[in-house]
Length: 420
Image 1: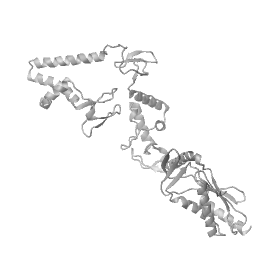
Image 2 (image 1 turned 45 degrees about the vertical axis):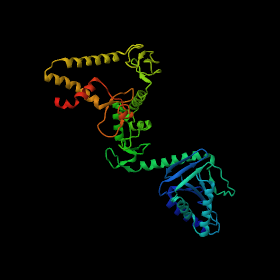
Image 3 (image 1 turned 90 degrees about the horizontal axis):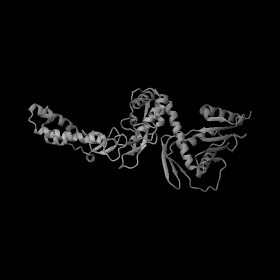
Image 4 (image 1 turned 135 degrees about the vertical axis):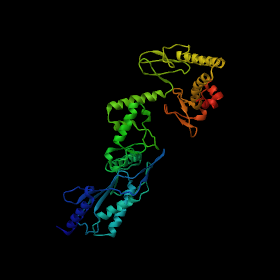
């Protein structure tokens, strides 16, 4: 065995002990091999895409390895000629790789007749250790001096696709790291939960254990409040994705129920959708000025206000009943004022009216015409949020409730506490 061959085998043995699975033999003669050079980036950096239409930017911390292919010739390392090598990358431009090839040549010239592969690897790693950004562009560049050792599959017309692939690769590595680490669940406060038993939410990246998220999702589905399936972090409140909920509950029957409830809640918030009282199908209504609704499923024509058989221009029974009740209350007030009641009877009657009036006086109606639930404000600014239909509104602009009872409260409200 020649001295050069022995040094080659010793160098390769040392490289294998250091690099492990990152080095792959390509020949039975131990003279040709491939090295995956993983970049140990010290901090996240910006990945940018620049094309003719727009500019995109994101932050990542992991890049696919750079491939260094080495072939030892018979006179290495004693010869003045370096080993034959090729640098390959799917995202670095040919120009960039050619610059790296020249740097490797310079290192060889400074260390003639010495084992050189490990120094080359360290040089390539160092080049990316403090990178601040990587810019991809679809603009054509001229390169007159092609170096055959620089092998790049990056082409300007593939810049957008490569941009997406790098984001996906970064996410895969992050997920893999997450699975092999231990985490704390902010719900149950356990701090030694394996990543395989945790779920990281896609939108906000907040993490919770599977057991807590399962109970949380199951509770909202069973109670019908699927619109409140949000990130449990009180400072976040971003909605969970349906795909995440399917993984969390891991139950096809429960997930089907979730989808039905979600569809129902979504349709209920649409002003032009009502539910057929006969077959419970969603019905799209047309003219806002007409109360007619016709179910496509069972062909039932009904009033979209009272859900009874369509009654053309006549008032709904519910509306008629409301008018009659208001009239009865008005007459009762007039009669009460004309009656000669004992002081206790007068206080009791007034107390009943004022109890209703106090509620109406301190609440305003949700502006959503399909909701109209009374909402009370007890403190804070005028920005309000309806917990039933999730409508945002301004308190000062919300519809006030004006009734005879409220007018009575304005007249006698200051004396209400004296009646109790």
